[in-house]
Image 1 (cartoon, rainbow, N blue to C red):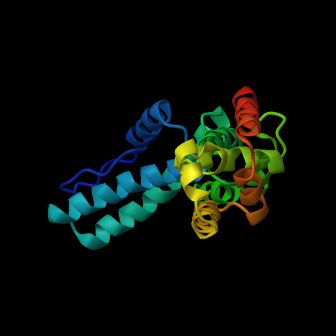
Image 2: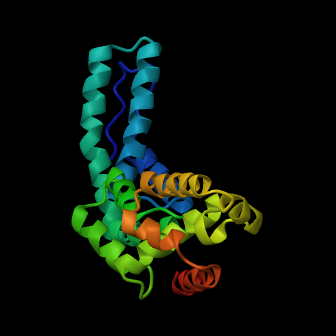
Length: 215
């Protein structure tokens, strides 16, 4: 049951019912993790606290009430987890598929999930199984190829650029070094980057077809 709003607050604080409604509204629009939903609701509490202080409410009383709302937020998030509306494992698998299709390396995907509050065991499981029958090594090649296609590297380099590069060994080596740098900065291992850059166009397209079929 919602607590009675203290009369001392000029700016009424959020009640459990309104916080729960905010949680449901957010989940209706966005996929998120347990930590993500908790942060959404705590930001709502923080906005109230700032507004209350600007309205002249006692800063100490506002801070105390905001602290009392933290376990309320935790309880709401627990409810969403029990209802199945929040599931970190489902979120992780979906996000892995999306990020791999966008050309993100396993290292980058893992960092993204960690920042969302996904536990390491859940991240590992998602990275291992989320993209169909593709194993981690195959998934990494596919993701690197996606990035190479976006940046027009390796097998996706236009023919006229390939011809220009071949005018001199130094030019070709410089272009390859830049391509390796692009893939390295995205988190791909050197052996994966070299394999992708050395692929023929037909082989690269076959890998892309497989990624589309698996994800």
